[in-house]
Length: 499
Image (cartoon, rainbow, N blue to C red; front, side):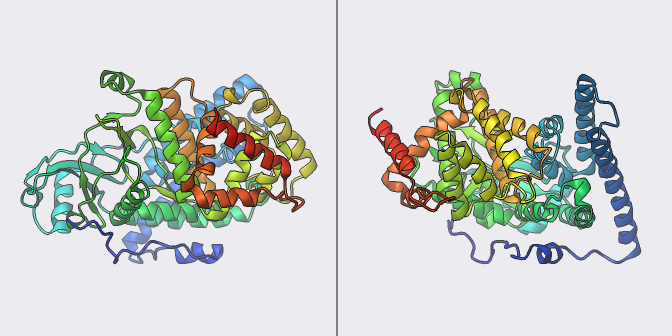
């Protein structure tokens, strides 16, 4: 079996110009009358579903539906549940968008964010005869002939496809992902509709706060098209595997390229324990807390060193093998972090550790979370007060999710927006924290981050990161060398080697 990633599958690139990107990325719509009729009905249904939701949020935000806090809280949660049900009915595109919105406390009230975080990919399977026909068409023969053994009943079903189990003639047990029929056309139509809706929203920034709707769609478009091309998912898996080649504690399933196409992906079958199955972990004499620390450390490496991360770390995508290794699955949704963004994240991390609240606000500005039209003096006072209450009291009590949510309650009043590049970073971190708290009730994201961040900073394998931190020793506001921060780093190094 060849382990080389096929050179004929180029990575998908987004055009640099945001406006042009929204035009170029669109897939031409069919022009026959049935397709036009279907597009019209779908457009009306989407606009009605999302329009009624947006109207309700706007009226409630203005206080026209009642201003009693207890009543409003119940009303928000009820409507959030209805929204989640509507997104599921709208199909795969909107399930995926809802999952991304589950991290956007700057866009939606917290009850909506909380409810959308419950969205799962689980949907009813499509007929087996259709799946078998797709496998035959893609691999050139009936699955019963291509594989030594093939189980015709799916073992899992998700919004984009479903999974079967089989065995190769050469012996290895495998799983086969089969893409749902016509899914690409359905998603293309939904994106076509959403781009027009996005352009409409840009005309009324006074009502919709001027968010980068098209930018968010561009990021979603990139991710969803990578998920639709199973060859790209295979490439992602092998990139991840290469990045962790020196980590014997991390395992990535082997991709069998000779049995894989854009719509069918065949990979090694892994038998393991879900990371949240604490009883099974204990029965296997595996330490959940140590495994959780390993999982957290892999994410610091992904975000701060590799610039390439698994963006969907829910419990079904991470298994613990019997020998204690951590196995990652499903690389359809990945994120990328530029060196500049890595440097800014490192700077923000040390501002938090140093209790440099003014620096934290500057980070929000540098990272483009904050619009230039905001009253900076007023906003600084609000954010400084928040971080002093949440961080300066006791770092071990801070929850990343709680901090994000409370910040969301404040910034909902300001022209504040999460850059599209952060949508999947925040989603991954919040999902990771949720898993971690189940594995270790005492888990604290910021507290766990400190030793691993120091480890990456001061050990040999992190030359690029050390260079970033050296750059961050210059104060971004004055341009002068920050001796206080250097002293803080020296203390960190001392505590690492002499705990």
